[in-house]
Length: 332
Image (cartoon, rainbow, N blue to C red; front, top):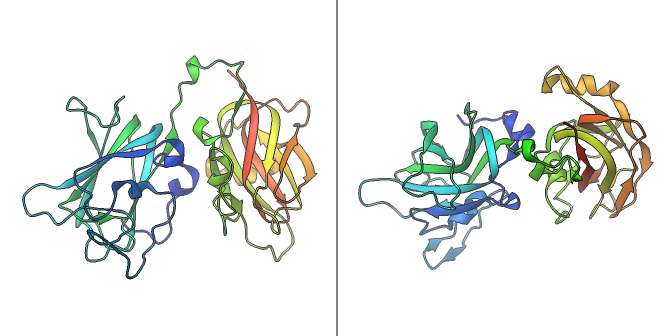
């Protein structure tokens, strides 16, 4: 199940195991060689030749000792928020002679960091073989909003990263509709769907919590060498009415877009694959506005835009932004 082209769920879903959403590896049966916390590090795994610690070769991931008896090792991840899972990336990058031959994944619902003996675990990925130094993309058909994932490795070894891609599950029924929130925030279920280019930075970064950490913590396109402009489409966590717009170009100094505009729509039909075509005709949410380097820009939306569920960003001609915030109230 190793892929050369990552499936759509790696681009249009949220990584529910992102520690910046509060996800945490809460338990591992053994992490002698490599700390279990590294399993969900948002950064790509690296290999550092010649780096050793007191237990042996330093590896960027979770690695257990060589098992000398029956059984198998496992790690438990508390997701950053409950969510329905669409797929996984089981990444064994740089693990060659020490990767597990096989794995499976279980999920459960629990209020505890480490689910107790009463937890009901459900298999969401059946036992499958793994390869060394590879990404294994595995789809998941479960419709349940899970809180915890258990990664089982048979019998031992190391996994560089585990990404858990899905959709945030939020109880909007009990939410106060008069409360202003960032409708595009990842913690509220906002997510990137597609961008025409993500050469230097992933679209999903602009919905992350807090300020950007550096220039790599935003959405950035390559240098455009042809006419036109770059664009991206995102889904709000809940349909709503936008009252304020914040565009942050933090850390983007010689590569921020010259201008930006936004379009929005309450999408009622079609598929995510059809959105790029549909979005060309969405109404204007923000007319074309100039941007400055390394600055937070505050705008008011075009009057009378009404309820929207999706937004299209147009940047002219190319470049990068750190964050996009769409502040407003949900529509029932």
